Image: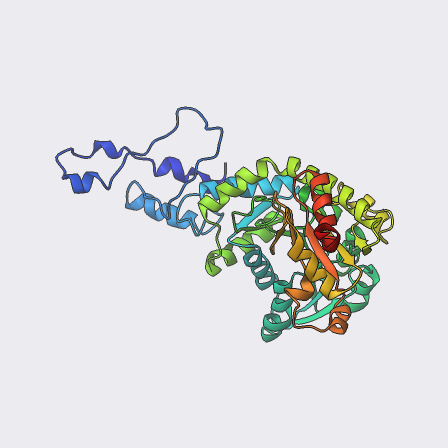
Length: 415
């Protein structure tokens, strides 16, 4: 067993041995440490910031062990038993050697980039990324002396053409947000391997249920655990899954930066992960049924969903994904005003940012996150003014379809 995992036994003590002659004020502070007689079905929440040692020699040993490998019981910024269980679970689901948990998805992304890039390095990223990730790459990385190029993520050749001798990372999100474009992971990872470049893949949209990038050649997988992994819109968290040596480097950086996951958040993620496969399977089914229905509606100009045969990368989706996901986007005819009217007319779905929860969420980028852009600027950014992004939940698909239809034809409903 990992040396770091001996901590709980080393620090377990019988506090009841202390004298009952101590005052009530003292005894109310010091409680017995309870060891369950049988293994609990649900992982306990170790909601503690620190742990005690038996004596000074043991404290010195624990402090030395805390430097490497990652301890589960020393100080919870270094590691925590509840967090450790979730890290093991996500590593197993992604088929990687080791997982690391973070306070948010962006904490995970920041740690990866700050650990694996140095001044003078070059990063090649897909041109359709989460907004905060893009800002990190366009504002912060250049100040660190890291050069960044954005390329057409649907073309593996674009990564090859942009790579140079100082390129250290390829960064990919697939499917992309919000137009659900795909990147051929096996092809891009092969290009990277031939050049000694690491590939980092944000697998938040797909989840390990639908896609496992490490098996396709990626070196690092990141997630916003806030989304599908938690699945109930009630927790912030992130994670990284990679090889043991890289994870050790990331752990040291995480310990310094402080973006460690809270034990209670880890417990919520563990609880959410128990139903991950069931939830994602239902969301896959719902999204495909809704995409096919809306595709045939005259009020819809286009549906972006890799599960549709009309999607330009449908064959790639079938090859690298085991399910097509719960995310889709719909271009409504009529532009910005129709898109705004749609999100204001929904009754069952919720108008909200984020994604991946059991409830269906919709947003209209032109009137929300990109409201300051003109229609022309929206199109240049690859976001049509009538585009609606949908995170499909686990409700009945027919109820959702009825809700979307009444929102597309509000005048008819009023009549």
